[in-house]
Every structure is written in structure tokens, then in C-alpha cells.
Length: 109
Image (tube, rainbow, N blue to C red):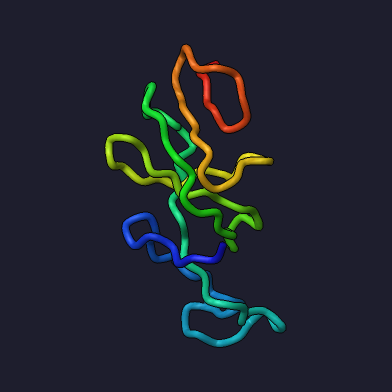
């Protein structure tokens, strides 16, 4: 399912010089170009304790060459996480200490 990224979960990305020096002159040939990309903020901490979330969309993240999921939590918060293998739209995930061990759930170390 293709969808546009959420505006509050993306930010501008600082573009590198693309082979140009401070004056803008090409110093490393055959660099630059490429497609415009938006940076998606990924929640790696998963610190929403014992609040279930539902997978709403699965999107491709061009900055990571990976798929990410948009999660709607029960308290109204929305976050991106890396897509767990086998998870589909509508699945629920939970992060906490006493959650069952299943695909997509997050437990502390």
C-alpha cells in the first residue's frame, strides 16, 4: 500500500556537497544527482510501555533501503518503526516487560 509520509514524522535532510567544494565547483567528478528523499524519523527506543499499537501503513524508506511501518498507538500517538518480517496492516504490536514474545513486540534486554 503506497502512501505519503506523515508531516510531523519527517524532517528536512542536509544534502552533502555532491562532489562540490565550498565555492560550488565540481571537484569529484561523476557524483551528485539522485532522487529527492525525505528523512523519516524512526522510533528505535519503543518506550511506549504496555500500550498497544496498530500497523496502519507499510512504506518504503529510501534512506535505509528498508520498509517501515506507521503505528497508531492507543493514546493517539503515531510513530514509525522498522517493518517486522511477516507483519501486515492491521496487526497489533506492544512494547513492555510482560508482553508475549511474538513478531513485532519489543521487550527490554
